Length: 244
Image (cartoon, rainbow, N blue to C red; front, side, top):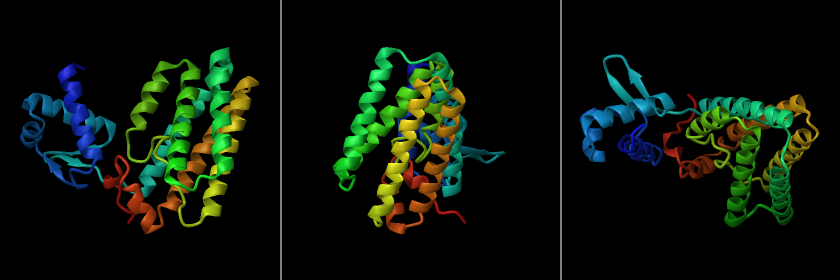
């Protein structure tokens, strides 16, 4: 991909995720080219790239439309990302951790434990949890040594609310929210322990279950209208529409 095409694709992706276009909106090649200040060829190629990513849908003889995401589709995508990450942690276990990565994972787990003990009840603490959670998942993928998994997971994570950084907290029932985070952290600890023990299939199974619970929690938490409004402030959030 040329630098010009990459920049055009990134610019259009950012506009889509920011909600500059309503879900279902038809995008015309010439309008996209004018908006981005690029040629129609670059606009067409950028739109094609985002069709492959799933942010646009192409209808025969009708052009491209902005994808409308249901909550179920988001949950499905999280489980697919989980399958890829499950493969990553299995390969990390089979490969073995080097000392630097082992120490890095231990540091992140310790920091998550500290945040959990203090209580994830403020925006600052939620942001801290999100950063640590995202970094942990990135490290687990990195530990696999599989570049193709890294690319595939990165692409999946561009979809709305699919990235490990796109966490949805239960803000009304704080006890339930705390239980969700405790369970999530327990998964992290068990996954890392399985990798260290070179138990690939155990790590794989725990990561798969971790993704399933993440998807289930998103479905439950997004059922609250206020939480849904907060979710729409996240990248890709404006593209979400409740399941029909």
